[in-house]
Amino acid sequence: MLPRWVKSGTVLAAATLLGASGLFAQENWSYTGANGPTQWHTLSGANAVCAAGQNQSPINVDATEPAVMHRLRPDYNVSEINLSHNRLMISMDYEQGSFLRIGKKMLTLNGITFRTPAEHRVAGESYPMSLQFMHRGSDGSRSVVVTLVKEGRPNRALGEFIANMPLEPDQRNRNKAILVNARDLMPSDKSYFRYMGSLTTPPCSEGVNWYIFKQPIDASKEQINLVKSVVGASNARPLQNRGNRLILDARGQ
Image (cartoon, rainbow, N blue to C red; front, side):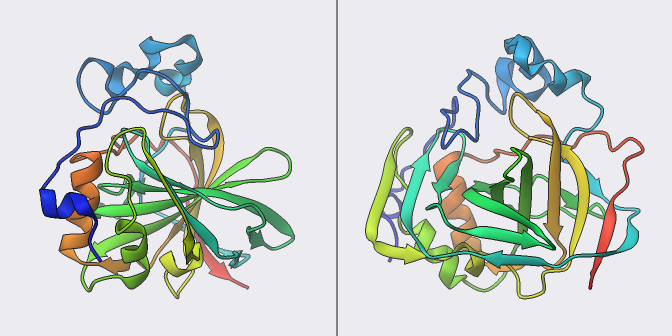
């Protein structure tokens, strides 16, 4: 089932972002114009690291180093649909009690955000969309797992989210009758790249663990365009300087 805005042809513009589940700062910033990425550091003193930071995200993932790493094991429960249109992106608040296990570490899944196009590139290749799974450790640390999305076959799991996306900025769509599992938005092959970076939204805080699945998932051209029609043509921060950071090509044990 397609959402109402597909039939009406409504295209919604992005302006500012309001916080969802504490994932994003409540500030007047955008992805274009005078408040765009090159000016984020001027909008608030808290955003200074957006310009001064040495470990910023996103980056182009290349020149990786092979390493034996723990597998990513999503131990996610189903969650009711709880989607927000936060002006610059669609995000989903996930019910508590779902975890990502990495060796002995256990990270709580807080939510999912939709990005068009994908913020990271892999060996220079760009993707039209990505899903970012936002996690918190018991020590307050942040970890983001990324599923890259390529144009291909319709994605049934993604279709559940798209059909229930809020239509207007600052709207929320919560439906207890529709249950989803974030694990269904991940590839079957969970090998990944890992590096240390930052939030890709103000205040651009560093010390974020990024895990990027090597294998993308499919979504139809129509599905990708529907997401774009809600949040605008782009809600991706431009690539940042990698510097001398190590990017690990994780081989599971």
